[in-house]
Amino acid sequence: PLVTSKGMLLDAQKGNYAVGAFNVENMEMVMAVVEAAQEMQSPVILQTTPSTVRYAGFNLYYANVKAVAERATVPVALHLDHGSSFELAVQALREGYTSIMIDGSQLPWEENTGLTRRVVETCRPCRVPVEAELGCVGGKEDDRSSRNSGLTSPAQAAEFVEKTGIDFLAVAIGTSHGVYKGAPRIRLDLLGEIKKYVSVPLVLHGTSGVEDEVVRSCIQEGICKVNYATDLRIAFSDGIKRILNEDSSVIDPKIYGKMGKELVKRYVQDKIWVCKSSGRG
Ligand code: 13P
Ligand code: ZN
Ligand code: NA
Image 1 (cartoon, rainbow, N blue to C red):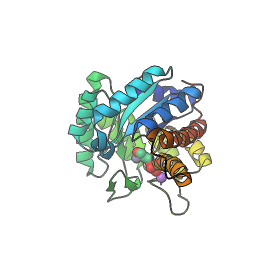
Image 2 (tube, rainbow, N blue to C red):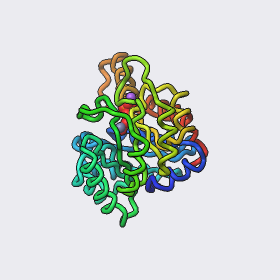
Image 3 (cartoon, rainbow, N blue to C red):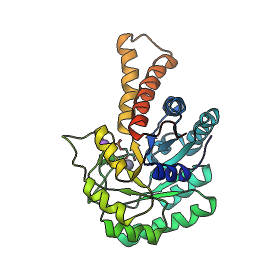
């Protein structure tokens, strides 16, 4: 069923595992992610960025995820990823999203804190949890490239969580969105420090391209939500190319869509295994 991400991530924190959060763009990706989670008896989060929401509308993603989640017995949450304004966050809330990120990480401290606090105050009566970011995960996320970069400061993180009342904190510890050129340097030491200062579940962004073993270590150090986007796009597109390159006369979207879906599903199952969340759903 469709539930909020709050209980999922608190359970993950207690159990020393993480819940995978997978960016979806279309019906096949929605089906792939939920089927993967169902087969592995794992909780799962599906998320859409602002550009994805602009592509098809909140209501289409909500209806898709709601329908697919109702066929499943495992908990499924629908999350707004990198919410870019107060208005968009409120719209997601009204459309039935069960988890919301407000990303003011590009704003100065006072503005990020103020915006985030306002979103928390709006979502709390509906019991919809809020994720926010402090510091900056680099790279190209969504259709926006980040201007500043900078790792999360542990002391500031504590103050940020306290002032805003957020449920989850996204940390910048060296990952970046998109594929990496060369191996990323992930600051596990910094993550350990942040965990000492902050008690809410922590979120890892930019995980496509990070080695599974490194992700495992991050989970050991307090990461409870792990975001994957770029690799799902690649998997879906690879599936479609595989079919059309073999036989360019195929015209039934079900035929190549099915292969796209299959490769996304395999990828998600692999990452659920990395997150150690199977059997927790
Ligand atoms: P990647 O595209 O690097 O997997 O990042 C995903 C992400 O952080 C979504 O918010
Ligand atoms: Zn992200
Ligand atoms: Na990445």
